[in-house]
Length: 266
Length: 206
Image (tube, rainbow over all chains, first blue to last red; front, top):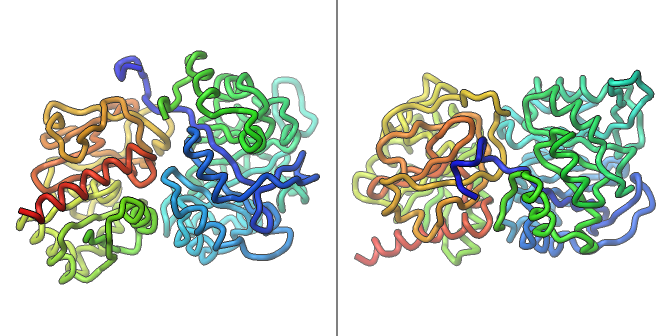
């Protein structure tokens, strides 16, 4: 692709997510029914070499088990990973975040702790920069009038309703110093029926920081839809990559054919 | 031996890991004396421009200038490259090294800021002979994350477009800078870091 034809230059990112519990990558449907998908370090390396633009590792039971995230798993995964690496799950304090950066994370993702005490977003951003702080928003649709989007934010890995509106919370997270929003549709997660493009667009157009769409990836078409209709800056998926259903390079080629700028060759 | 300058802001771990992967030994320091005597210097960086204030108060800034004048290879990454300019509107009171003309300013674009993600670099006329970007084809993708950008002035070796055209890389004699994160830019980034290591060992062998 010639540089002159690129209007912004920036590409849409494809992010491979490793949902980890007790040191192993797992995959569930709508946050339950977990099955083993492999070793985090091996899978991270595999995804990066097959063209993923970023790797996210989420310790999905750290918060519900009230235990710290597994630092040694983070360190081992980061060791030979030379693409951006985000870690989340159970980050409760500036000290937790500092330990993860020290172990090799480039960004941390905070969810429950940010809802309970939003000032933690600012504290981590002031120390490590906004680019290092992703606020993860797990949201579930509520009935709403036509042409409007209403979704409620959940915490503790989708276990507890908060009463917060997803768009309003994303805006607040931005104003407190978040560098990106990782938006997961709990309705779509694990279904492989497509992203929630309406919800993604509602959040992506309400904030001026990048929004990563998550939950529901099943086919290349779903990614095309979430980048076009959903206005997403990046899209994240887990299971379709782990089980080799989708090759990231093939996916990117499909996106490129649809006129979506992607990092190719990669 | 590469000396990584620690100023309690940059994410040193990632940069150090990349050098280790390349088989290049590195050491981390915040001691001006170690900086002065280094074989090669790398200033990593993420975050706010004001974090570089610490380099002035600790005496590292003067040590870096002295090392540069003696020909020590010096690579600045992200805020580390911005520091090679006169300053940044992000922290107007904090002085840069003014090795390159002009100051860094926030992106003037309707696009989302920060500029986060993989974008392409292309060499300027000056950059055709770049040692840092040797064997890196125009259009290669590298990873950026920043809200402030450096101007395209003399010494800029490569540029990137994001609503406007800005400096992606600078190079003058033994001074090198990259706005993007080579340690996070896959094989392309590792190649750039290797080029810096090669330049350092060639110079040391002379």
